[in-house]
Length: 189
Image: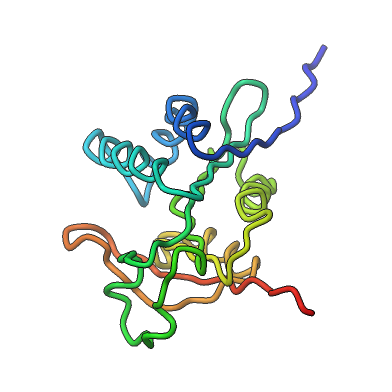
């Protein structure tokens, strides 16, 4: 007798609820980011944990989880960019109007990851949609490793409507990324 596969379920958390989920999705984080091109080790994981713990304190932070049974198979999180956000620093040739933030204009996706077995099955798209659902922002942004390192991710983002804005290296000793933006249609009249 074969076991019937369990359906993937999705949840979204904010504030303390998101803070409480860190240990729940860390095994998925460690698995995904140990793979190429990331190859993260204990120092990188500790840095992620520090950043996540700071981000959950910010207004509007959201976490989306995908589970099959009790197992987290994917996760995504993001938050609105504050007026003093450094997100656009280092991206060349951007006009001041483009980089202006006010805490409500732009939602930044900081992480979107799916474990290998569940990739290319729609999990990432559902997580992304759940993260964005109900946001009253002009645009969504994210940073992705450049091609060819992250070609599948870049292809998915382009399919979802993102466009490339430019390259950035958030940390001098860190890897380069491509910043992408998705314009959110605004309601009319």
